[in-house]
Length: 93
Image (tube, rainbow, N blue to C red):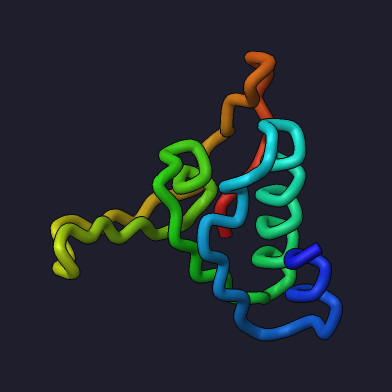
């Protein structure tokens, strides 16, 4: 429901705090696909997550420790393995 409220107004920016935290893997993947589609349409997504799988959807990953940046990486999006072992094709912009 929170995702629906966040995207209904077609915002320029979405702040996503653990967007898949309470979801099963299938629904989590659907949320990440939706965020990816929105990003490809021009919406900026800022996501906080502890999930390496969710972080892999990002173009840029900034790791924090005790409030300090400890690493930063930019990467093209690569195919993301789904829980069933198949690859989903998401390409970076």
